[in-house]
Structures are given as structure tokens and as C-alpha cells.
Length: 168
Image 1 (cartoon, one colour):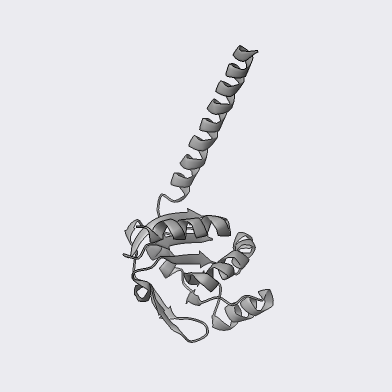
Image 2 (cartoon, one colour):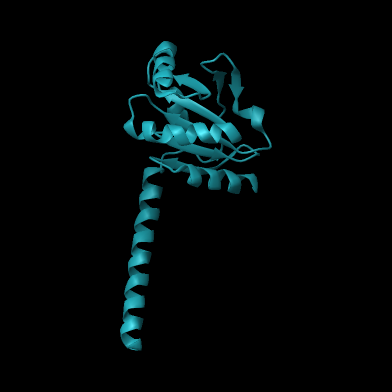
């Protein structure tokens, strides 16, 4: 019986390691073009008229989140991003989503209140290496990119990364 249990344990451990290697490999592949190190400057005026710059949050972690109105995955994630914005520094960037009126209308239809910068031509996303959306960058208090996630990310996953970035 013990030998059977040992074989089963070995098989489960091997399978878990294979899954882990695949997940880590996919993560590195999808984020391969993302900017690393010091975060590029990002600044502008939000849709509600407030000036915002990444530099205003020196000393505390910030989430920079690229999204689009036409992205179904982004839509799934927006409630989580809004919840994070209530308790953490968050800059969202609506990339290639139309003009201010169109993005405002979309936010209103979705019932969202987010600090949104417009990136009508996608140049901000390119500067950050965000080849697709959603793309989330966690910046530590020193202005360094600590975590990059492309695709859907849970609220708790982002909260954990923000917490870890606060210890950097």
C-alpha cells in the first residue's frame, strides 16, 4: 500500500511541476515585450479633469492598468480595478477606445468611476510594451516596475502584488 501511495505522490508532484513550468513559461512569453526596471513617465488629465502623473505617488505602490472599451476581458476585470482604486493608487489608461465622450459614455453605461487617461493612438501602451489589453503594471514606491500581468488578473492577485511592492 505504501508503495502505491509513493507512486501516486510522485505522479502528482510531477504533474504539478509540469503545470507550474507551463504557467511560468506562458507568463514569461506573454510579457516578454513589457518594459522592466524604472517605469516610463505617464501623465495627463483624467476624464474628470484631474491632472495625474505617476511621479505624484512616489513612496507608495501604484497600479497602472491599460484597458479598452472593446475588450471583453477588460470588461470582466473593471469591477476589480474600480474596487482597487478605492484603496490604492491606480491609473487606468483607455487605449484605442475613442475620444473622451465615447469613453465617458462607456464608463457611465457600465456604472464605473475610474481615474482614466486617454491613449487614443496607443502610444502610451507602446511606450510600456503593452502589446495587448488588459495589461497591469505594479510600480513600487521607488518608481520601479515590480510585476507585469497581461490578460485577466484577479483583484486579490493585484492586491497581493501591490502589498508585495510596498515592501520593496
